[in-house]
Length: 364
Length: 68
Image 1 (cartoon, rainbow over the protein chains, first blue to last red):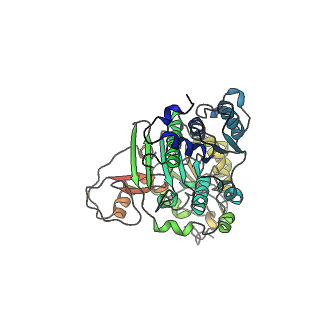
Image 2 (image 1 turned 90 degrees about the vertical axis):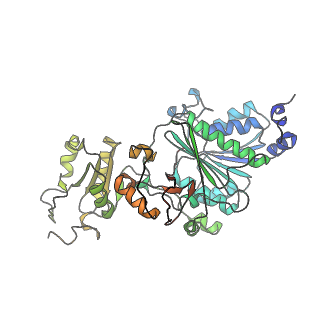
Image 3 (image 1 turned 135 degrees about the vertical axis):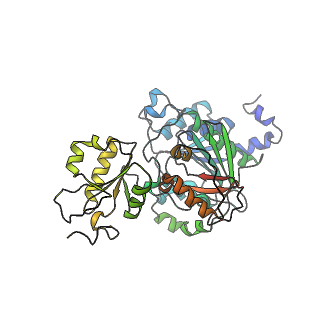
């Protein structure tokens, strides 16, 4: 009897599959909702070396989905705690603990020694960075991602004619295109399902069993219990944004600023405020502030008045603020966003003085 | 995710000759689409650029997810 008897018995898996797993080196980025279940099953299956990279510490609100952790672990390092829990269960596994977030300067050095990378991160910056790094190093990348009740699974850089994330989404979204930059709700079982699908693809890649989800994106909807897969094809636009060398990669800034307020151009602001319904364009300057501009399409509510009585915008869904240069409107947008996190609150870049402002040459 | 934003998960549309015309019509019908990032799949194939349509295709709008 051995720990792995039941999987060795599987047709096509056998002792050979088990040996391949025990010789595998798999790096899991993010020991969170996706990383925890993936790590648990990869460890149980007998993967020889597991890298765990996460710079975060455990918070109470993580516990509904980050199932390697419990109430007594709050405040501890996720990477270290995950490794300790798994080490206790499966002492033969080698763990590499990377208790910090990967950055472009150090990512390649960390990734280089692994056969496969599993992306369970929680932000677009890391996703694009891992995509580009794995592409440069030619390491298969298994990406899982979730949003509320839906999940995505993708496998990149596997076998010939591999696709990458930029073939689907060529450039990272701007902060104002991310539906909810701050934390959104999630039912723990969803990352449990997607993280386990990632682990399954990892085991298939390393042992050669079955058909890997190659050049496809798989969508899963928990509410409807529906899977939907879509084929990816090379995107000519994807090439130009991929760093061509390790040096270029290291210089790249992958962080996507995710401030509370959205800062948008006049063009977008005018288009949106006119078209997306229940919108208000507001001049937040003092009433006597120059240049004085008049237009029926916007209201004048000075910043101070809005701060004193924010309830006056309660019924408006989409709010576009502008001032003279864009500084005060950004500040106010952030304050209002704290009060009304569900509303779309935007500050217009450059304000009235902006070269694209419709008021540029009006007033005094 | 888009379905919740648009408060519909399926829609039938009159015939458009190209994917760009279809997208423009969708953005007129669902203005919130203008503010979101997504890619277009036609008959379960992700597409780039402007594609000619026959009229019977299955169209899906696929947003990227970042959560983990």
